[in-house]
Image (tube, rainbow, N blue to C red; front, side):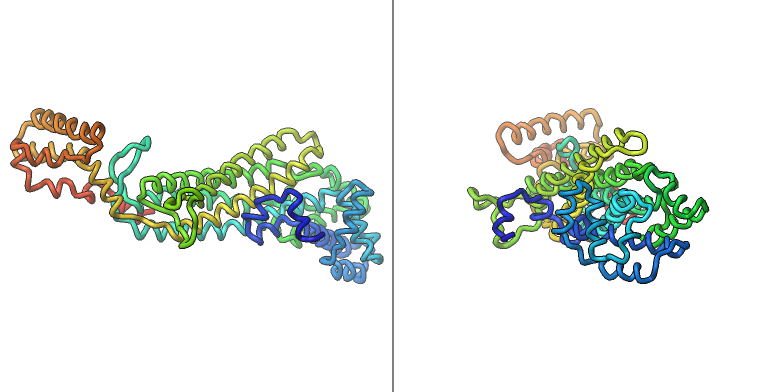
Amino acid sequence: MEAADEFVKYRSPLVSRYASKEMAYNFSDRKKFTTWRKLWIYLAKAEKALGLPITDAQILELESHAEDIDFAMAAEEERKLRHDVMAHVHTFAHCCPTAAPIIHLGATSCYVGDNTDLIMLRDGFDILLPKLARVIDRLANFAEKYADLPTLGFTHYQPAQLTTVGKRACLWLQDLAMDMRNLQRARDDLRFRGVKGTTGTQASFLQLFQGTMIRCELDRMVTEMAGFKKAYLVTGQTYSRKVDIDSLSNLASLGATVHKICTDIRLLANLKEIEEPFEKEQIGSSAMPYKRNPMRAERCCSLARHLVALLSDPLQTASVQWLERTLDDSANRRISLPESFLTADIILSTLQNITEGLVVYPKVIERHIRHELPFMATENIIMAMVKAGGNRQDCHEKIRVLSQQAAAVVKQEGGDNDLLARVQADPYFTPILGQLDALLDPKTFIGRAPQQLWLF
């Protein structure tokens, strides 16, 4: 097929535009079908070791052809047989005529299908975990750098008590650390389906080994060869689809975290307090040349919504698995499992790029603080006046009137907050005029924010 032909059919943006090569390969046909062949080799080796009449020459023949898959032949076989596993059994047998009789011996399709899925899930987590660790590292460096920089806190997206830029980043870090724990736990909890037969009873292997308990040893040997410490104790024809829920729910939770972080960054970009990296020749808008849109954060939010939405697939799939299995899981899982990992992959890569180059504008942050701090400092001013001999109720009324006047200037006239100037001009506050600068020092309003960062 010519390269131009690729542009006349749909291509998933997750692969063509976004995801890393390693994650795209992890869910590729090449990885899938070479893993099938490796599983057939593991099975043959274990069966030989446990006494079945399989020769070294047959094993060697299988191993020598583990990678050279004739995909065209496999596709043609599948068109004829309408069965993907048997198509690849025949394709493998074609290049391994001596070993052909013992390929897939005693196994069901889910031996290769489900076990390969579990390998892909495990390897997918192994790709994601270092990426998440790098994001946490970059964001921790950012938090440390700005641990003491006061900034307006916001509740209900309205100005609230001050925090610090670094402390706010710790809110993001704490969620990401929970995601790291969850992803590691999901990865470590994965087990192998193993060698269980058509309905999970191992009946075919019991027959192969003439009723001996050696079938349990077969399960253990193949599980270890595949790199797993444990296999599920019981299965139907498939491993329980709740395993997919466990995996994808943790990815969806990561998606929620990233969406929150990147939404915060987008809000702060609107305030011009923080910006994501912006390349020298990057174009923010085709119509408005001055714009610096938070496009990376927006991309993360867009993909995170897809990641969260994908969780409904395994939830519904697990709930409708009839008895020992039904095939209405297959087409859904071909989409939902890879897409969840591919989406999480690009989200983390993009978030790493953002956290490595976040730009902070301290002067803008300072201006916003100056605009709001006089209102927040009113209680401090009242307390200082009381200490200087004033009456608390009288002072409260003075501050209330001056605050409303200043608020009217801000809201009705579009002016700056002049509450401080009004306090300085009122003779009533003469006893504390020398304290005003200290009373309005932003660092006295951030509480234990810097210390909380170091505790974290």
